[in-house]
Image (cartoon, rainbow, N blue to C red; front, side, top):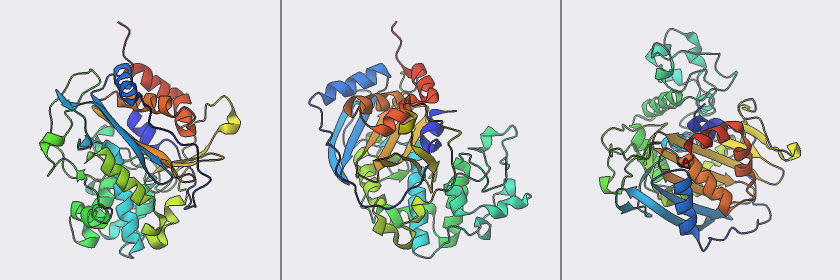
Length: 376
């Protein structure tokens, strides 16, 4: 299982729109944050990093370190490729259209679009926005995961969990045809403009001078591929850490969804088998699951909603405690970025229950051991 799937779709649980609980102790910006970022980038070799701390539903502090590209420092203007975190915006767009009455979360997308690979299988009629957003389609992640590069159901939709980016692209096609507008235009007018944030579904239109130069697991820089990424509902979201923090806070505003405010909190499918709790004290284990566009993890005193994105040369993690209004957005330019981000948050916020749970998982530990710099 890849680190992308681990952080994008492993954990699940119920989510409700609740008032903030009693404020948690503040996590102050460490005086040596620059050194801590350098340490994280060295232990898990990566080019650069940005971190935003959120407290009580607002941005608290930020820090930047390392390189955007050769000789170019990371700054608040750096556009990171956040990979699968694109799915959180697709979920937000879908919820807003549902709240406006333009779509129904439980209607078949076949009313507008049927993927040609699935046309001869009647089960395509059971694909709905809710089933797609909660990864219950029965489809593998992408067509290349099949021996013949052709999408096919591995189980009946709505009966199990399997993470699928291809299904999110089908949802985007459904939304585009229903609204008679390109998907990227819908995203701009329904999500980005209302929340006053800049982001790019693919790198088209972004200033190349602001894009990260990708660094792979081998610590070598690749090339900026600004022309290679078509607009996507599932991958290659380019955004600054600050702008995604703005989006995250806007997406967590319950009133933004009107009648759909509770839909995000309805547990759709359990993924407990994918991520068994390995904490020594099992009484501290959370309730885990996947809702509409997000993974969630519910502890006794915390209720996290989160998503990750990871690819050959990038990593990003965003999470938010619905009880306290606390969270983080961390973006890393580098294929070893999962290690960099988890290490940094562990040092900055050692009592964070979500990160402690993630770090206890054998799958995560295995991935980190491969990313860690050798002692040679």
